[in-house]
Image (tube, rainbow over all chains, first blue to last red):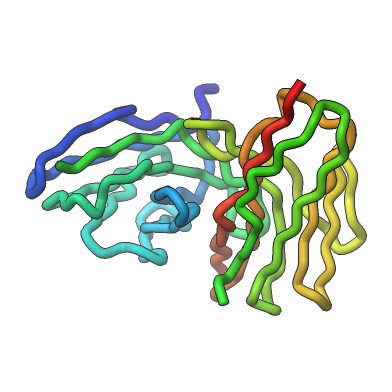
Length: 113
Length: 112
């Protein structure tokens, strides 16, 4: 099992460009999450998907959209990147919705110039 | 008051030392508690869950005090490989969905 995989590992964008961060898990988990981690801020939830076909906003959803393409894949889209979106993005998955371990992907480092 | 607060450190300790981290949380309705470990430039990984009765896993002991809304992690006989950032994590439930709230982390550096 690969666990949770994310692509790309690194990306540099110019302000206003768009991109999609990909996440996939092979653990047959129901719930998937997108977080961002900034220095001095800790991990913050952007969006989550409790199950295939559903998505909900987290703490910091502005400027992002998500798609739960199927049970395995959960993508995060930046329609018009801004320097404030420079961050490390982590995808995570979890078997269910109650007190389960979340497994994280290796992260995507994004720099917006 | 921030939802989950931790001393950022760094804690610089020699090998073999005992070190303790504390964490406070603001939501008295929080139901589940965890410690995650994050190595430099890596993803967070679950270290251990924290139960009301306290729990131990080898050199690691976690305690929860619901009355004081306080969580602790004790590491005995520190190893060089324990150097990492330790994240205190609280799960809050809204409806049927639980969401993790992360502290900013406490950095530990174990020196030879």
